[in-house]
Length: 376
Image (cartoon, rainbow, N blue to C red; front, side):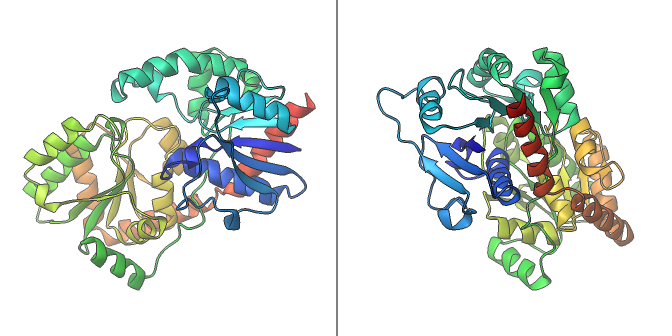
């Protein structure tokens, strides 16, 4: 079997979809050495990306298909032509898109429906494009994968697809995320200007992550308790951030806030492993990898009780707080910071929960989808 996977998410600093694409492709190749896999993109992969040839199993290659004037429209023209010429048996669109033609079956991953369900947290042009294209792509695909049952239900409801066509396959924390040594964590904290007691958030800065509520909760902590932790926000700047940074500039807690920007995995591992508590008050997620990464490193987690988060983390392994209740969030964060026994309990149960998921299981279930599609 020859499988091509969309590698466009790998052509920029990796976030959730990029990590999904790489980990899935690598573990597919490791699990099925008799089959051929390739990551194909019209854009070159940056040299700083983990997808160098040295990082790939021998049956997985990274291929940059240069775009010409004839195939400039990649999904409509360039990719279908390539798939037809290359003899690909199945194409996996890892980021919501598949070609409308190309002579082979297609599988598409829909990570979430935030552009449909929370359009106010996205730029208008992206919402219009998604609402126009995604239903067409979903009907075109032979099979659709979602990262959770909650997203599967949303896809069936809003895109009106045959239930047999949509399958949920959970993701997993990457292997790099395990508890770091105290020495490693101390070196990273010193380099980044982070004190010993801190609350951590990891993710792209964008409205859906609900960071204004986290800032409000943090202000409450500083104003009403003796605790003086730092709040560390680790992640690149996304979209529609003007209101957020305006509020940060006016915040009385600004001097205890630290924005690190996008961090390498080794730095994230050190921060996950040494934070007093990890906070993730997101309004909506398709799965929620950062809480699982934090749990894998032993961090106690406070997160939103939204269906995908509960499904991914397990309700008993994290502290769940309504995402728009800043006072309740502040109370939960302070309680965990002050209670060593509770931190140890959440750390242990979180590591056990995260350990039940693996990219090998994700790859095995995805391979079964490919085989079923080709068999039909």
